[in-house]
Amino acid sequence: MPRAERNRNLFASAIAGSTSSGSTTSRRTRLGTNPSELYLVEEERATTTTRTETNSINRLIRKFELFEKKMDLLLNDNADIKKRLKNIELLTEINNDPDFSKDVINRVVKNIFKANIFPSTKDLVDETKHVIRKNFSDISESMDSRHHSNLFKRIKAKLLEKLRGMRGGIASRVKSAIFEIFGESQFPRIDFQSSPAEINSWKLDQRVRHAYRKLFDVFSEDRIYVQVILERVWKSKKRISNMHIAWGVTIVQLFLNPDVKGIMISENLLKKQIKINFRKLQQKRPLRLEEGELDAEETSEEESEEEEEEEKSPKRRRTLRGHVPSPGRAPSTGCVSPPLTSSSRLLPESFDTEGEGRQRAQEVLQRSPEGR
Image (cartoon, rainbow, N blue to C red; front, side, top):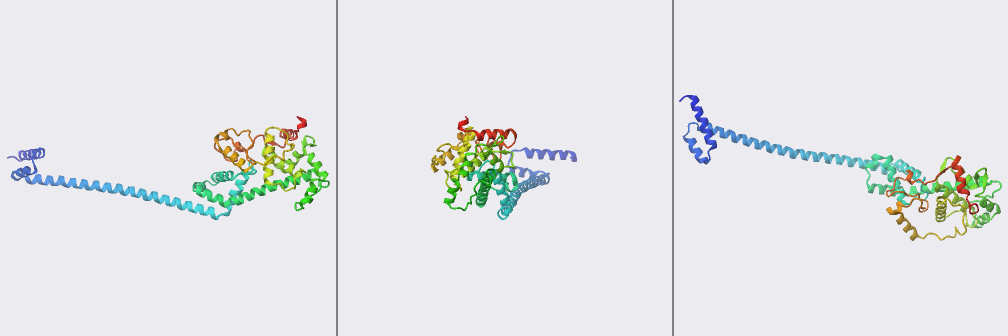
């Protein structure tokens, strides 16, 4: 039989064997009697080897994929560890760097004092977070609520001390301006270390009484005494907010008023009168003390707490515009409190000390019941 024909028969037999539905045993029987048995056995071995190699490759691929996933996890863990170490370094720097705390304190006090004379703890906490977020973004990203809380606890005492110092500095400047405006040579001096009897005697002096009565009289041209005093205190500023006007006028009134015992003004009385004067400014009423005004009962602690809770409610905040806030606080106009330095937290109707602002200031300060 020619070789070509024999090969065709072998291929035909191979195809017949691969498509046969017979068992392995029958195939082996045929292979045993077929001259091409050796060729078919080798072919089957090759197929088995290929299948085994394919399975091995697939297993290796799966193992490599698992290895890649583990490497990704390790890399992520490594990045997280580096981030945590960086956070620890930054927070350690915060804790051990007095310049950082000092910088934060100065910025917070400067910002908040523009609108809040007696800020609440919440005001200070919010402004501290705002200062860090705005000026120290890298540190802010590493801080959570616990870090902010710990930082505020550490700087709170110094914040309050600096605020007291600023309030005391303004009060001293107001009192110095009073002596300058009314004439140091004619106006009786008083020592703050004087006895209560000496202080009461000073407040009953006719020259002091006369100065008190002249506070809302014309000093020169279009300016009145109390306005000149405030301009002397804030001489570096062209604009003075209504809250600072109310504060300055309150200090002058209580310092010279013969009905107020002593010259060291209590914080409660100061807050109460600031609130009254601020309300008068908003309502365009005269700032002269009204009869019985100082005799009004102090707001109880329960009423103060209720007022604070009321101010926190969204409905209250939406309607707060035009309403007098708690003493020393600037009004808020939105449901979410913006930074204290934004325009919405600054008091409205500020007046400048030049031009039209000066004229408006005189009109506001000089109004009296007799002139209405």
